[in-house]
Length: 119
Ligand SMILES: [Zn+2]
Image: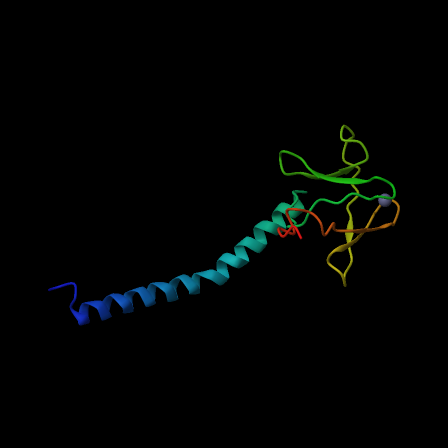
């Protein structure tokens, strides 16, 4: 009954392997749930994109995320949401089009949150 018993060690290893398999089998439904939650959040107007907020350098339309998670755009911080949303380019995920003036807006590659290396 020693813990050095090779049979006991094998039994434990087998249990751990089975537990790992069960955890892996649980992943796909979790990923589906996460996608569904993201979709619900998006439908509620909550900002769920994992990218920096945008600002149009041409007309000044600015994207913001309010304290309650609501995704808005405005020209001045005190203004209500314009209801406009930047349109992501289908071919280039770092390229957006301003919904107000149509100018191209590129994600800032120098954003310190996005690019940790300061060369
Ligand atoms: Zn614009």
